[in-house]
Image 1 (spheres, rainbow, N blue to C red):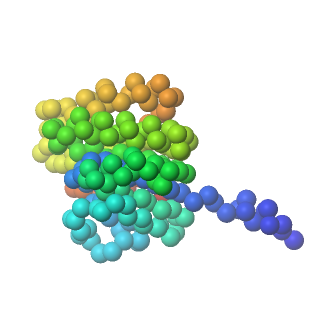
Image 2: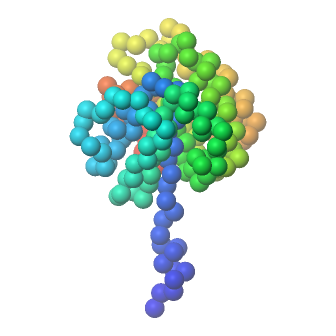
Image 3: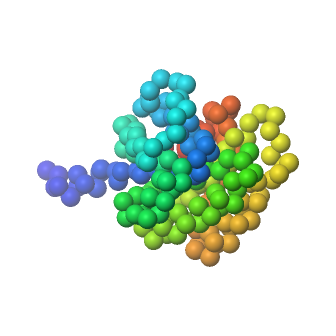
Length: 186
């Protein structure tokens, strides 16, 4: 006869995946494609409407929930003002950077730094992932080298907090790039 304690050991802890970044970085499209691949999404192609606040999607087969955070300034300010509502028990944190949006790189870096401090406070064991997104065919990533510029700003802060990270180049034109980026958590 198994005890109640034995049953709780066999139950996996729920996975909380957070996807954040600036507006128009491609977060919702990434989540749509990912949930489609797991059979937990509506039909493809994904909706191209801005996410309002936070949308949660449960991946029933994986005991996981993906929190897709809208990137508009109004919502970013809400998340930062009320972190206790959003940043607890994060298993995996994905930050999406639009590598084609040169003019918003500094804002993206600043937003990541604010969010990163909250991740450290509320979910210090969260794994950190970066999606350098929109590495589309015929896009010359080296032209403005936004990926390297972003990394130069954030690596010292990650190292100072003993946080390692994993990064991926992704595009919706290569679905395997997205599947690979999420294979560590799903």
